[in-house]
Length: 308
Image 1 (cartoon, rainbow, N blue to C red):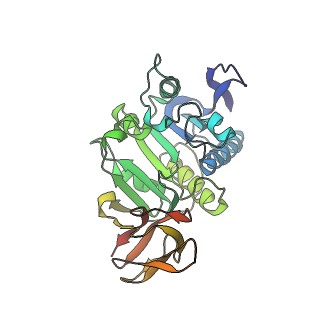
Image 2: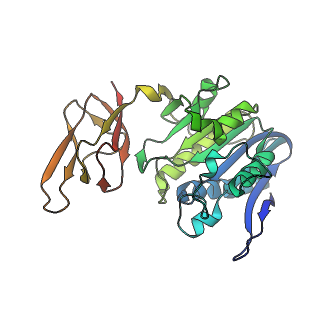
Image 3: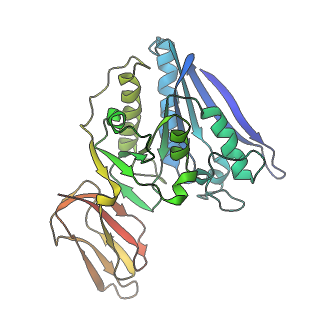
């Protein structure tokens, strides 16, 4: 294992900003794994730290296949994580929407440019991503529809679902999108949690990355075969939005099977506890996403359901 400092940014008030990378094996650039891009993605950094530890053992055992290089970057935004902020601490910009970056631009553009320089040229790219909405979801692999995506490869992670996202204008500056445009098969793994450490889903995400590498001859490792991944289009999800604001008392979790008109949650009056609205399931299906913050505003997304 080679531990490297990939980028350094001097700070006038505190320690230098550094991005650390861990290289395993040698030869062709086979796979790069990028962890926490935002300050609340503790689970994503935890998964990458577990991956670094596992690959270090595998390198000592000689089970990394000769001719393959693996790069793991556990954290890209340690400053925000240190002070408990989601985005870049100074101007509240999202690092994940600064790619491919600009070496003479704003601070986050320069960080993105430096990172992208190191992770370009890899055959596969994996981002351990946190959901952009506050909530929990079924662990899945997500790819952006760019014309370069390969859904059959996404199935090799063995996660329950492969979600295909149709890009919005803002997505064209994301890491996943730009990786694909620059000839890397890119995938984002959504563990289902961000701001907390959840051991069970962390183990599932770690196993998914190892399974993918084993199936593509990068490592020699016996892994659980995983799931036969079902491909779903994001636009096919049935979304349930809040008709009233208040305290949300959820009555289901991700991966629960629900029936039409089943009560998914109650929106409570924050002063007297009365029920303002009972949230019904619009379709039979499986709960994919559940909003997790207790206070919800009117028209907030509460649930996403895989119909059928």
